Image 1: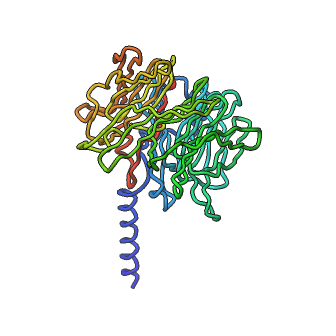
Image 2: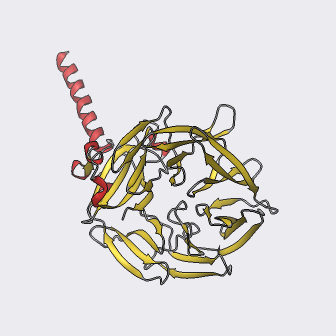
Image 3: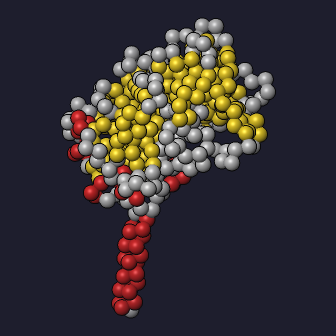
Length: 396
């Protein structure tokens, strides 16, 4: 009997070891950063970029989802800090201060380190950013349907002094953050209504204000293609208007801030494409940018489409080199900064696989290529779960 019990225990032990080997949620220690590393006040000084990866929400049903903040140092070496999962998690950066968010907490790192725990776990992010006029980092979550049948988008906002929590009672289709407000495009799926709203922050609460309901006489269904942008006179956002299963139009919506007059400008049209999803941007939350009275939009085909806000002229300004045309994604990401766009690219034929390209938005020239040493190994070392990129920021 003892022999049978011993054999049974041995089988369980072997099974546990096999499970942990093949299905454990961990990364190789050589690629891992510890909490003591990111708490160091000098940690970000030699970091030039950061990427956010996570498992999807459905992979977190066992509470074993993970996210990774992957940092690239000045030598081109990648290291990862592991947290709990948060699908569509975003990064917020301001003045060498970085906000990291996972399902249970927000972390502020840079000159000092602070961590704030949430009372309620979140599983899907919407957007993070910094309100300069308020000195507030903001991180918004797609929380889901509440017990009364309404929809909740929870929000955390604060700084080193502390964080507050509030709720935006709407499903958010698109969002954007300016120096002083959060902009949201909400969707009522039952009535197929789309409303542009803004969210203003006080010390302890948020105020959601309706701006305008989108004109939609054809009762079209829209899909988000960009963040919401703002200049002195207008709000801008890009949606995809579906014509049929294989055809769609990419539409720029422009809303005048004072008159609330709406304009629809067609940026592109795609029909009978071999790969219908190929034109979807690498990351719709980061795909558009305003600089010097020009709006820049990068689609999944690598085309940078420009809209001159003064003349309303639309053109394809330039195209990324060797951009994929089949819609297959390999964690490609986008980051705009003034007159530059930075793109995380993937090349199966290179040793390290991943690299960053820097293009001039003015000339379309490729200025610099930065190799990312070690990222492919970090991603391959995740066991038992699949992770995907959701944000990317250049730090210097």
